[in-house]
Length: 347
Ligand code: CP3
Image (cartoon, rainbow, N blue to C red; front, side, top):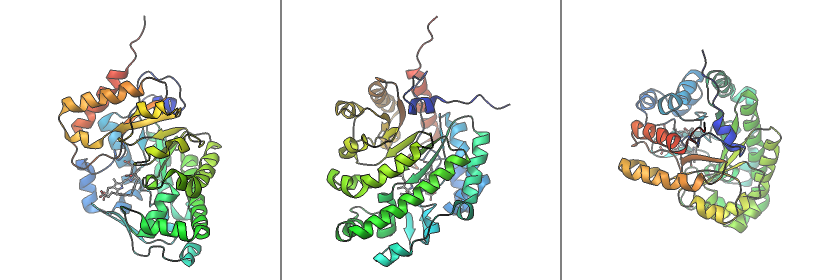
């Protein structure tokens, strides 16, 4: 028999009261797990994520092993990008690498469109199976247009995003076309995941924090507004996350998004002090998981004491789990968050 459905994460996303603070971890399916590493030795990243059986297994594993309150689909932000005519592979320790990055305006105009039925049937099949099998909500996700554009233009992860910003400043019309194409793709991709059974969706805009608030407002915010406006109509909670994006949160607070994901640099207290009233998710430094348990517990308490002040808070790390982290530490942390935040029953 299936376990009863645990909707604590979804309640928190909707700012409803929860019996305890829900928890899940970015990169909860990944290289810190021996089972993942074994499969990864035999398959490429996309072979794994695009095989429904493997994708389902890898997505379920952290739910079963760690006891987290949500699953996140095992895929990558580059999954849909491949189908626009961009040749991308994922390399361990490097991340996505593109052999034909965007170099000219003509390259932008040449980009294709995502057709979910033709291009990603196995991803959607995995979502359907997970929706049937899981007893916790499934988070679908996509990359934010700025972050995707950065990979497509730079060809791989970049520190300064010079080429990307160069195109943005020098060719604003071409940039606008690129943002519109990527917004269309993101919406098509996320809507397909929602229709297949994803309960919430997250936009990972990891590199958008490299923009000033003025440039975010000018070159990216209009696109994000279109995306979150459209997703709101689908009736599922939405999450927006970036790294080093603390200076953009006042702008994010104006967007029709349900949850703001914080990295570890910005304290929850300081975010609330700015008047940001969205549901928050985060934000323990993932490197802390390499420290002694006493320190992990102390810092988890510090984060939780700030987050618990309101309804509508989800515990997470400030970025993804590192490969060196022990499974048992994450298990213990999950248990600790649940126990520390459980409201005692009143008799
Ligand atoms: O969080 C999850 O467990 C769900 C799956 C997921 C992956 N990537 C799997 C993955 C998610 C949500 C992502 C998002 C993603 N991918 C982001 C946004 C979040 C962030 O980390 O900032 C970005 C920027 C990417 C691009 C990317 N893919 C990078 C930078 C890397 C890491 C490179 C490295 O080796 O350190 C990847 C690879 C990747 N994506 C792995 C996993 C489990 C590990 C690589 C592998 O097995 O080779």
